[in-house]
Image 1 (cartoon, rainbow, N blue to C red):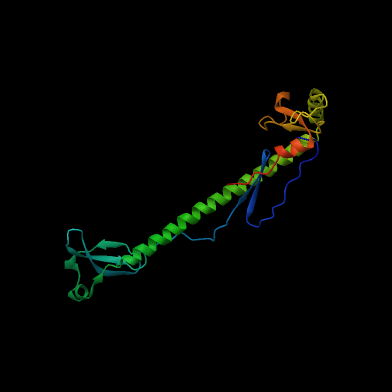
Image 2: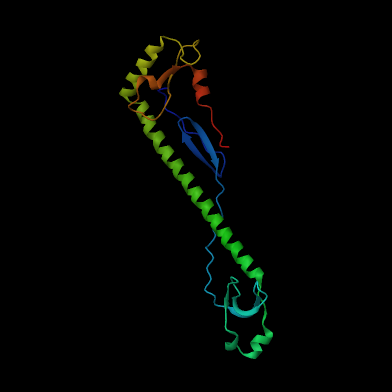
Length: 200
């Protein structure tokens, strides 16, 4: 890596989070989901319905008109007028409620992923601020000079051009890197090593 302060790329997409990873820039498109409130039902509105069990026996249940949940009710506790007017259980109510729950959990998954990506972006920006400060330090200038001298005027990437940058082979020990973790490279080789990596 050169002594020149690294520039952070601008986000051109409104719905993208840029991960400023030292081994390449990764743009992750983040579709921010529309807020969805978790569906909750207190079964305030119910109606007596009929339901046919798997054994063919018809029973009476009290079905919630919001979520479709059905609970058994004793036939002898119901007046004849209710029994006579009871309609079959509405299965569409349960299906619609389950769809709302599925939509909510899908939203929660998307929201948590977006938060994680935003956190990764923030941590990456903090890393770059620290890294750029290190590139301005005397410790880096001394270490950089040692690597340039080691190359004896030849790029350690292509072996033909003079080196102009010192590149980290790993960023695990930034600030305390060993000399074998650094290479002296020319401009074309340095640009090649830092080609942006698009997320798949």
